[in-house]
Length: 194
Image 1 (cartoon, rainbow, N blue to C red):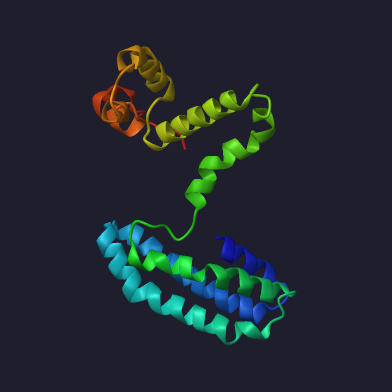
Image 2: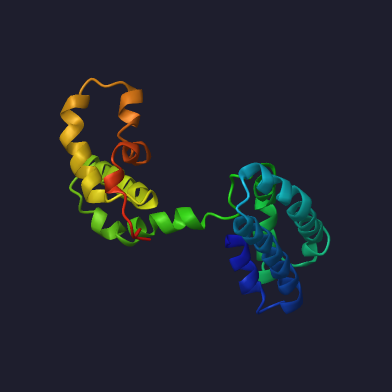
């Protein structure tokens, strides 16, 4: 998505080049949406990417190495080319792993509340309190992603903590939201909050 944003900005300067690149990005997302619609598992998604996305991505790289190099680094188009090209090897990794996503939108959506509250978190009191706040925010986001009522989760885990004083790492993992919900199906929310 960040690469796409740069090309959207470049569209004001060089409509033809930017539109060419944006069309290919749209094609890649179309392939991903089709994989989602078909409910493909990770291996099948990888195969689809190899067959359909790889040629598009290789064409985009070739374009950046030939046509893209004609643009000044100071221009919006040149900045878009530079931004995309320096990250392209990382982007190509999605072709070899069906679990990887083509963008980090999910991660960004998860940290948005933290980012929005950043100034408020400056008043946590001290570094230890700020660290504790990060842990709590992470647990709450994980509860939301697993459709768990966070109040029930936190009440249960906090109440059981004295019994885990000398617990092993394996035992503590059972307290993580995705494991905890296996033993507390009543805490799963019928109408998930997103």
